[in-house]
Length: 366
Ligand SMILES: [Zn+2]
Image (tube, rainbow, N blue to C red; front, side):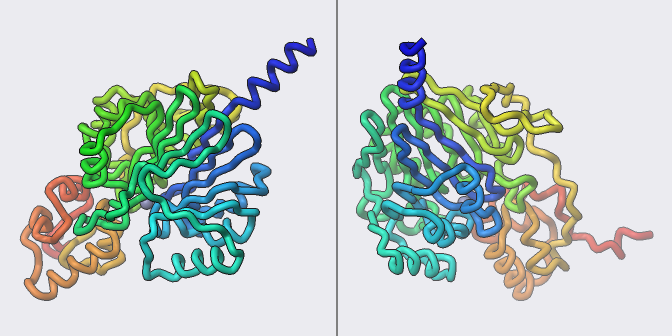
């Protein structure tokens, strides 16, 4: 009996848990290593209140807190987290941002005297006997001139627990994936899908190289960006990866004993009531299709920035560009004409097409 108990404790002591927290549209990943070592990668939006969620889980100390990049869906809750817990070290990619959210975060780092580590490729951090975090990206020379340099220089982390590997990719996009592929990408069991499953990430070449068994997508239910993108999902499914999504299943937890990894989710896909997180469940994720949006039709020739912003794949900056273009050049002849806007390709148009019109109600009313 005593021997069995000792064995159980030994087994528990060797268990690594990775929780992809359900924070709506954003990222927050809690890593619980044996010996009570904890790491938080990103802190979601302000609204997600990651601090409350971590307290609910009994967390008091975070040995390492990582900001993959300074967008508000990753560091919105960061200042509160840094204030609310004993923090060992704070790590980011070294890129500054002009937002108040970023300024507040760095003010707390400074005020609390939290040790700062710059995330640079090949830096290793030991989390336990056989648990090592390795920074894969960015390199000392940052990627520049990409669609989003902040996304492209996201901190990418490989977490190795004996034979089991996790890859956390922040909001890395295709240029980052190419950069990593050029340097050589090793296979890894669990992939935190980059950029909430956006169309700009998860290229087939990258997925072929990583060859994950499981993928976790962190995205908000019916978010305004249309994440995860249907084609990105298709690429994941084509690669034969078991895909889990926080927008459908709530918090996703992976448990590794160093040899095998198991996944459990807060909710089953079909479930009305919650599923206990302790129960290990596997779901036929391949059948998941993105929910059709029920939102209103947007006339791109009359809509204001807020309305344009609700179209999948648009967002505030492209909405502003559309308005500026309309003011200068007059109305669009078709929704397809949106491809004239920088950053809007045929795929984005195809995604937003069901909700787009150029015809006013007056014209269509007899
Ligand atoms: Zn993001």
